[in-house]
Image (tube, rainbow, N blue to C red; front, side, top):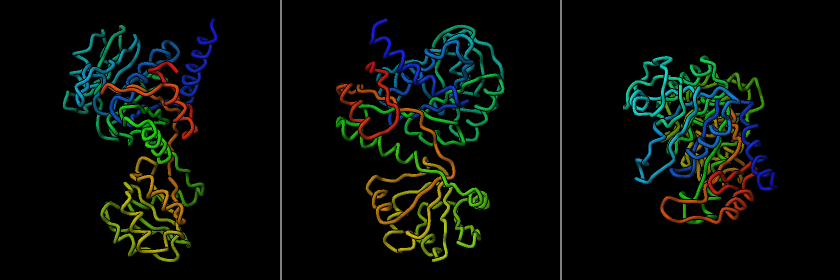
Length: 349
């Protein structure tokens, strides 16, 4: 075996070995056409008979022509024995022989989601639910049917479905389609990894107290819990600021957190330096790099209740708009900014 083939097999094994410790893994993309479907097909082809595979999606994927950019995209190729949860219309249009295992009573624009077993190899389009609770339900059903690994194919900018409440771990795909500027792509990707990788709150007692907070709340230094009367922190910055006090220990927000909240905290009160902002997980953070840097640099602290496990990144140096990066340089640039395994499954590095 040549040294090149040995290296390629080693890289393949590194990806597959990371998957074996998890039951559910999502594959999410920074943007359309970053190689997410290529990553999915790569994993499916390498797993083969090693594991009983389940497959579903958030939203729609696997179509021959990208419905946003009208460019050709890879199709999803599955092997005999794979169990798939997808919309009825997608099953009818697939070229696989299949056995219907279950009806879910979950509707989509393409019909009810049904669970089928592939009795032959072939191509299929996957259209799953758009609601978090339905996707969790489907993943659980696939595991009950004996799947050892369930892959969830993400959709356009739907990073929410990397949340630990949905899957055990995630793979992030990035690529040249984000920008013609390689450094800009690397910066955007590194910032996304940063947002998804915040440390977990280590105090189990405080973790238990946060269960009393429905959406937005405060835990003071005496560990007294107060729910704030708002359904979301978005556009509620003034009410939150008016609720701050010197004896605060944690500000708990289980929904989205935007730049506006951090800006208002820094502008209107020095108290933000005294408490920790607790969020559900990194997918709830919609923060720009500059604002996050300023908040932390001036003393602001952020922790999450549930950390996200990013297994690795895949990098696509090619854009469907006709430009490309040097593959080796792209990988090198990403690896200088991100301390995770990064693979180019399109360019072969």
